[in-house]
Amino acid sequence: MEANNPPLNVELLPGGGSPYSAVVTLCGEHDLATSREVNAALAPLHGRVLLDLSRCTFIDSAVLASVLRKFQDSQRSGQGTVELVVKAGSSVDRLLEVTGVRQLLVVHSSMPAGTNSDEDSENAA
Image (cartoon, rainbow, N blue to C red; front, side):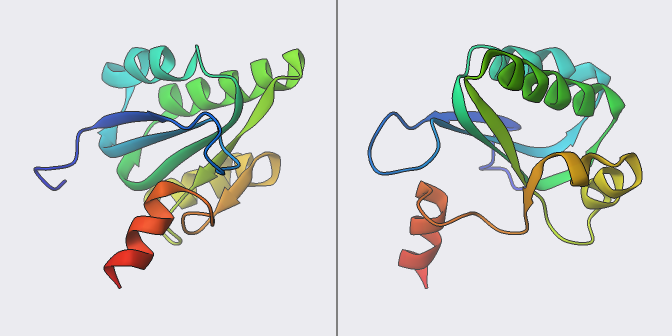
């Protein structure tokens, strides 16, 4: 993990032209030890939430359960959904495939258009 990347970052995007109400970014390894932090970050969010896992090197079933819980809560309340960004071929991508989560959630292989991170990477090019 790069030194300038916090392990967990929440960026609220109310309005502003983004299709997402929030972008949550996880970096490095996340497991049972950080699952409460992930839960706490996801729980208060409503609307269309983008969870960027592209810089994760590992997530375990506890973190995956947090993601699925948020997705189910969003679906039940009718207040949005959760979409993922996952690096193709990564251990996170393989976990989503093996568990069937890839078929349940919208999974992007790069940041979707309209997110700040997407605009930043275009400006850097």
